[in-house]
Length: 99
Image (cartoon, rainbow, N blue to C red; front, side, top):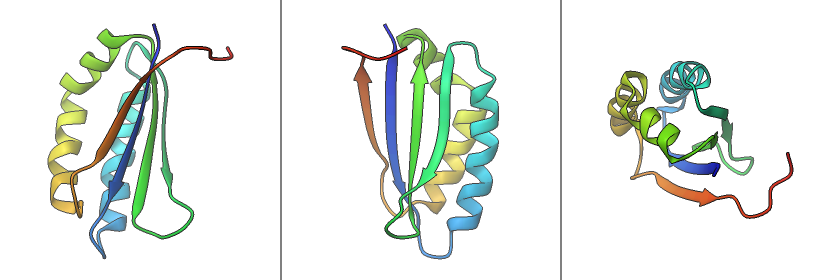
């Protein structure tokens, strides 16, 4: 069963460029992982400091592999110093999804 994760991260003022640089490394490496079907980074249109990760995985095992990856752990450490608050992470399971 596919898994969709949407994560919202608000960064500290002045940390936007450093956050995007760190996030792009994680995004590129994540897209190459087996079981990652979709992994994108967005910035919220209203405002400059809230970012949205839009992720789609083949299954729960792929999510666990991603979370255990070195690039994800490295990004987590970097983001912890750049984020204004803890991220909001919403995990979703597919009900009726177009292919």
